[in-house]
Length: 394
Image 1 (cartoon, rainbow, N blue to C red):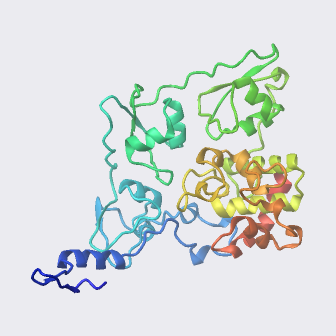
Image 2 (cartoon, rainbow, N blue to C red; image 1 turned 60 degrees about the vertical axis):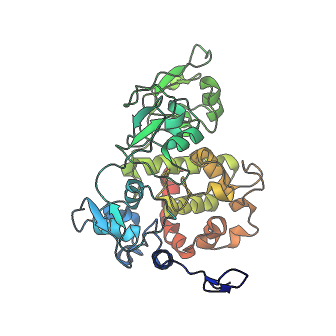
Image 3 (tube, one colour; image 1 turned 120 degrees about the horizontal axis):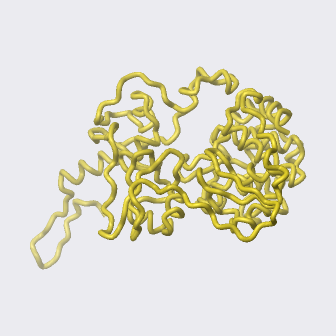
């Protein structure tokens, strides 16, 4: 019914109109441009191998002008273009302004570009924690013995929220000091006399540790009371069952021996390859998984992404790929990508092995059949590099 309709009754006629200020606000909101989470791929990088692309371009950190403390949005601005203009990360600008990947910005809005975002009010009994590089909300919650939902509620956060080093997080009902204490060694069940221990380092994964010592992942789980959703952190001590003779086993091949990949990427690529081998996936299927992971996350286990996308393959909790904790487990995420009879998700999602005729598809078509990307052709450029990585790490 139009806003200016006149209602007639025994009372004097009344005309309902929208106040000018409200009408202006509605018009401003309808014309606002949505904030973009991930900038489009620069034309200058298309067709290049990863090794030839500057790291600053890959990570959207093109520095042009020193960032001011605040910035006033003008017509045509997006979060990603503002971040690029001042050499910032899109994720950091979102976090500083308590925005999500789906937030809308509008002309005249003031954004904070420098400084720490104010933490949400916390209960009087809560303690605080200063975020460090590599932290995730799941890891912080587990470390302080609180639920992820409680952590969300205490800080006004959600699954799509971004945290950054230096940010202060309220720990509901916690008593931990602001700086996280050194992690205590994990008490493991009685292990065989021949067992040894491993101190977790940056970039370590449970799968990679098991592979290093030549033991099964299940054996590491059982010896330390862990499971698929467990999180490990630098400084933690893990028991390695029956591995005394393997304690001096050579470390994984240095990243320099794999063209285009750094140490973190090599570790994650080894997980993808190992899971593929355990499931009996062909070399072509493993190469497709490597290419998909490179396109989606640069083969990094990201705890952020477009909307609620997470992990190596940027899988989304909201579309049934698992909980955030499950998706951030690289072994499980890889199993879900491959799918098949051993898919942890069962029939909730469709992996590569569930797609009829995938072996006859092109490299990009097969990857797209799993990922359903807005840019299906981009997987093709990783076909040759993926086979090279597989040959080197294989």
